[in-house]
Image (cartoon, rainbow, N blue to C red; front, side, top):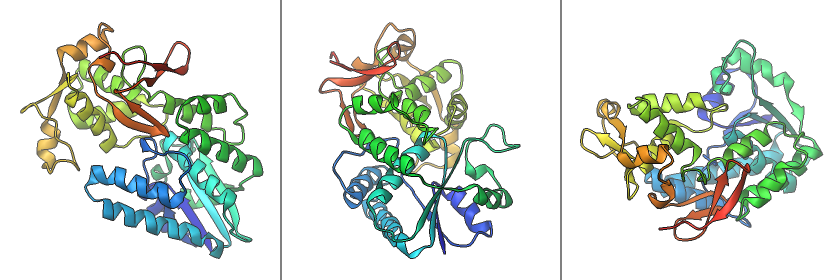
Length: 338
């Protein structure tokens, strides 16, 4: 029997409906944000992720249970004749490939074959965002394109997983100068990850800047902001909840860069229990400070208190912070002035 591993319930449901034999395991974790410190095994990092994600959804216990069930299913891989990984080119999927191939590099799975399907396009689908856009027959047809995971792919994934969890981004930048051909979508994905560090230019991450620019241009509804931000990305890796989190951060900065009408507070699921009709009726506008940041007359690093993780890097306004320098195309360590 075969085990199919993929990211997202959309692709998982298609696999289940495709007629392909075997079981489906969904690798649910928005790995592009939140902590992934080094030297934690799968169970320990899963517990940390459950605590982090439970702070958003409000239920650590539910998240921890889901991670335990996921990990137990993965450990049963030796009971399958083949494990096939189904993924795409975007940042989230590439990070999941790193984690999975790193785990398989040390796991004793006996004679189980490990295969990979990873695509960035599909005939007739433009723009291609992911496997969830396909229908059941198209998914089934992709199965024959799977290829055995090579030693070079495993070795690169191990190095990539170490670099992603390092406490500074320099390890990741060094990886980007190496031969990444075994995983051809990794370079673009990890570069996009580095662009989520605050920029020296204006103190905003790339996602924050895109959202603030769209509001400045007149895109004021939360749903339309998500769609516009999605369209700006070459490879979509963030969902709507994460986009709404960025909006909230811009609204809730100690000097707000966005404000929300009608009552001045941006409410979003799952943090707030808000009827859908009320949620979509909210309207955002840039504050004076937001306009000054866009004009490069203010730097958002002095206006926003950060205490966040990107992989193994902890970004805190209370200490020197790694920031993305777009001129050098690398991260630099900067003291954030109060």
